[in-house]
Image: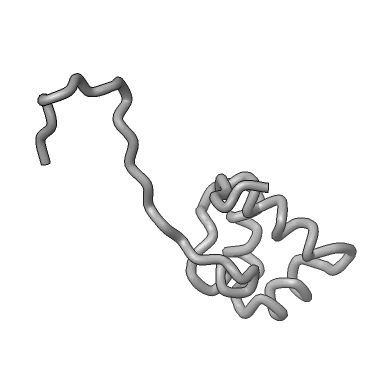
Length: 76
């Protein structure tokens, strides 16, 4: 598995950790509301700091050029 995960992969990890527990039980364990957790599972919201911390993850932001840059044409 890559060091970087997509939101879908993070949600899959969360679903695997949930197991057979109810949404309410799992949300209490994670430390968030069951409504918020339900939004994450339905991909309405992205996992926040508390959910990522529960999974042992942290959020980083990456940027990538959508097309290759030519040599000598670099701007900040």
